[in-house]
Image (cartoon, rainbow, N blue to C red; front, side, top):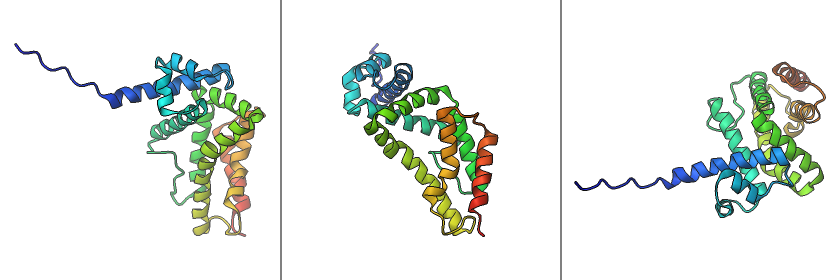
Amino acid sequence: MPQKPKPTPDASRRSEKSRQAIYAAALALVGEAGYSKTTIEGIAARAGVGKQTIYRWWSSKADVLMDAFMDLGDQAAQAAGQESYAIPDTGDLAADLKMVLRATVDELVDPRFEVPSRALAAEGVVNERLGAEFVSKLLEPQLQLYVQRLRAAQDTGEVRRDIDPRIALELFVSPLAQRWLQRTGPISYAYTDTLVDYALYGLAPR
């Protein structure tokens, strides 16, 4: 009997499997050894791929880590039933902000995110170039989602038109970041709900 032809390997599936292995390896290594001691060679060995595979997709370990964090964000969004990270607009600004900040709390206390994030935050303090790159490519795009939601709230009269949304968002985002980074207190849903209540009380139309 003639043998059945073997199925053609799915290259896209193999590439995605390798990509996910690289993300996991990069995040694990930076959490264990710190950013400066994490190398492309180490990531490749941990992921079980050749370093040329990594260089084919990324030019530096910083690029690998940025994509790895973006992938973590996408996974969190999918777990929450969203196609991508976004701030909902239900018409209730307080409820929308509280929901997103509660999801942020979940992410910040998740060891998969917390451990590498703290390592990169520490490196960003002494490595100005890395810190600036992560702010511009990862943090600022997320903050702009808050800007868009606050502008929508200005259009509906929930927020004063004379406020600067980019400054206003720091009333609830920055305290959470500081408490998490410096461990000045526990972070919880109750804490972020209170931040929103305090911030919006000051932003409400007068």
